[in-house]
Length: 491
Image (tube, rainbow, N blue to C red; front, side):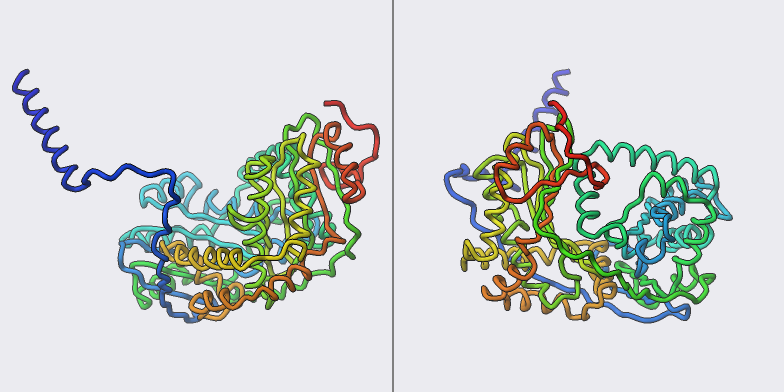
């Protein structure tokens, strides 16, 4: 026993000695001084090759041999907005969710077991304007993982029992969302901005989820997963020739067809005078704010000026909105703003969750900052410098992993951006002037036509909101439909 203790003591002494050599004692940390910034990250944009396969799909390959990993993804241009049938919102979600439920050669359980043995997870998703299916694998397991993905994408059987299981789960989720202020606010905000005729204002509902049939899913799958609108991206420990050979072998049965959609959207509803849309959520401890209006598409020439502007307003922790409403006033854990660019007029939105009894005061501060950014509080040189540095210095992290590189490269093709976009990014951000910022602020933040959606306890917040005299109040229900201005519910 004594000898064991001596051995343990000696081992501990050795470990401590080694630790002191490897990590010598540090000087006490002076918490009265702000830490100095670290080195500016170096932007290293990877190179890639781009070819077109015989079936019409675009193949992009970027070599990165630092780790034995390969990222593979197929991105489809166009999404639910372009390919879902009328009245069947949610078909895209159902289809992508069921790709792993079984194929002509494997059951859903067998697909899951096969992926676990390879240490991969194949992710799928279809949004309003694009869809993806992807994985990251070790180099040695790449071909096997790719074969599973190809089987799921081309040979899915969409079992009827799996559809009903998914439908039941989806209906539960939709019901739960009706009790979640954040979900309510986002849905109502989109509906009010875009209306039900515009895809940006539509969403899956209980009615559309119940209406979707297995035939709808099969038809969507056949129409959507076409190589003519596909961008295949392979990044990592693989050469372009090997990547092409692997892809062509795995997807040999993927016949030519399909084309990229035009993204023709209906005209937006005419802008209305600024108004507060109040959704009653009895007993809510917080009020959820969504303030904004339709904005520009991603291809706007004002993109870089808007990026700098939004960073100053609400796009970083030390932004004007967060510094005021969170740091100075303490009304919220965090507020922000953003432009949700798309192929169409993505929304400008600012908001966050506010302590209920500060709802009126927070609205006053939101409006103060919005008025400030359009000219009442001139943007300073220091704000511009900080915002530009934030945008430029966060860019290198996009290329820190094979997955990140894949996403960054693919987005260029999806959005129709030039191949040298990242190399010229810093130059374009740096070129933004103070006059540019004021111009785009006045153009895209129209204070006279703001849509102010607030979800909260009406009994507690209504009187205060009226007293602000910022805008008249309209009452809507959790689905964004007009609600009778009856007496508010009790707390």
